Image (cartoon, one colour):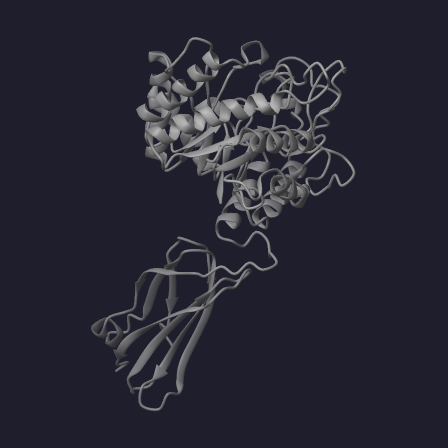
Length: 457
């Protein structure tokens, strides 16, 4: 799974500033970042200034070992690309970005097209959904343009908000993700298209407010949260199964998931404005617990390709998001260490036990002691595991098959583990070492490797 943050703080015209922000993000345990690039009417390629910013992000990410996902969208409903000219420009812009920055191989098309803030009109004069068919046209044009640049680019569609009113005559005309996905499927089938329009779906599974637990489902509403995975997969199947577009098997990326934390008194001077009453932020301990639960839920959902927290660092305006693990001045919150540990356990496959999950641990960098080392009493076996692992090292006498010594332990993924027989009485007969590893939480097939014959004395 991709586990990172949606964070534009790494965007900077100065490489040093971009690298510093990327380092903070990496120190918090994030190994991916989603950034944005805004298209405006008339643009068919990023401006020189925008390209410089994106190149700095690319360089900082490469130096920090961070994967970049780029979201291309227009900044608001006044610039919605509705006609063929605007959609063509948008597609050209996105293709030019991918051509200039080939390491950006994950591209999200649009942002929350089911909300009137980003897409108008949402409804036609007869009350039917208008945003989904129009967005489908934009998505198809951009998909084709990106694939012409590089067939390996992963094109992500959707970026849907988790709620919507579905009221054409309402004060705020929005479409629920349920209605939008259904309308998207109807439009795709009616188009007669024989190619896909996306390689995966991005989704924003925010809870109804930050005080609501991420595991609260919405079985009798059109909203979709983290606990509504089965509903989301069923909707995708209904919309696209049986067509050229993947449906129920379509990869899902949760590219925004945020829980706002209360700003403590000692940090209030960093922030401006007033917190909306509907946000209901929580203390930092509960923020960390909600992120841990969110990661556990996503980890066990089979078609979910990743989850990105929104953000890594707080925004200064209280009207916006204080959902980071850093305060607005870049200092860590109390939630920092707990979230970093949750991310590590998720990457190691140990954050949750999942029905049907079987992780096969692979041994890497394995080094048994050599004959001379072993004879001299140096009896450490060093190795790494591709996931978290339980390990067992056994010394067996080659003449009788009897076990001379056995040691066991646990290790974190990709960290050097030392299994030592130092001080164990092995006798004088030759032995062979056997190392076995298996996942401790979601066990798959154990892996065993053996040394050659070694003489203790």
